[in-house]
Length: 166
Length: 166
Image (tube, each protein chain N blue to C red):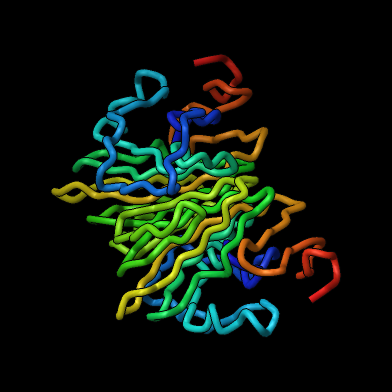
């Protein structure tokens, strides 16, 4: 998952029975992020609808995330212990990694194994909305490094690389 | 994941760089199952393409699975420790649980939390292929109960409910 807007403690709402959701009918949460203020503009236009949490899943999270034109999924980052997976549902998204930029279209997917020190993010450089599924597990003790900023996630909070809090 | 055709030990192939796959371009594995012989016909026509393993993910598995008309995803089952999630990509699938049957169309999803003793499976009752993404974590010590058969998965093997091996 891109940033800590994903709750590590899923809501304990009652599950639907049968355990089904129609992702097209969900209201996406608008723009929630806990990034420090200087970075929030980069994820403005990102809207997430949680799919896994309302279905009662706890071992991993699944969101359907929509990026407006110009929006990014996250700051470029990598996780120490948690794997991430994305699958493009609609529109065009540009994946940015150390390897450069790669255009992703519907049906294309990407994976970011824990501990691989190659920061990634998705950017919508197109003129229309794009959406993708994102999956991330909730392995304990995760840390996050941000490739292009003076920031790390350690012990549940954002810090500068010298250890001072943001 | 429906049955143990999913390897718990992902192949250690080299990851693509950038870490991207086009699911439409993958060759699906044909019909692999380790179910005991009497149950194999139910999953004939199930074709899986692993997405997470070739991307180097280990904490959870992701497959794109296609069911031919008449095929089922699995025997109806539930997991003791592993969560499961499915998202319909194409076609129509019927979800079967204790609540009955529910038609799933593209964009609909379902989740099966670990430890909820309500067996599930997907059946393609339509006249054309259907496909879905399936995600399952790899929490250790998982057990599987099969709702409609005299079978359980314990200690890495299929057993009858009285403990004798299949």
